[in-house]
Image (tube, rainbow, N blue to C red; front, side):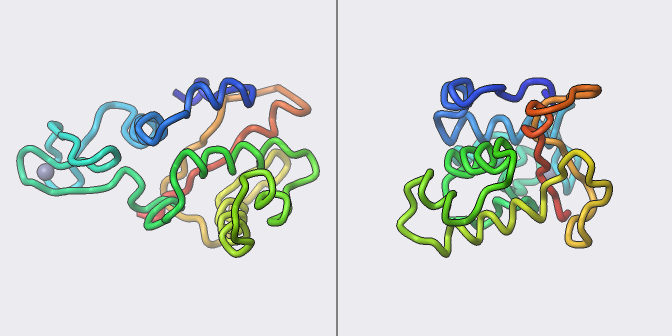
Length: 163
Ligand SMILES: [Zn+2]
């Protein structure tokens, strides 16, 4: 899954064109060996909504975004994925204003808040430590790019779980 991240904007548009596709990707990142209920370890989920799972055994419900930077966000996952793309593909970084423009947000505040969250969760090549706000399980969103130098390494971002 890690090597499965789009390399180009066209690929991204194609791959993550719907909330379902984004939620599926996050699900596969979080549960690479198949979904597991955090409460009873049941492995039979069913989708309550597009990005919400319910355990068939104990009825525990959880969102695929629970504990991630996307949790409780009113911004659609499709927009988040585009924001991540923009932020990670800009060599010199992305400003909140730039993000607002490219995503067509009416609100600068939304763009700023998203950028802030992404920056806290992101690891870039050459940066050794995660910031203190990022804890527990981290999952790379982006391809494995060992030994790759230059622009490609910029596409690596981190989705941080606070669980
Ligand atoms: Zn359960």
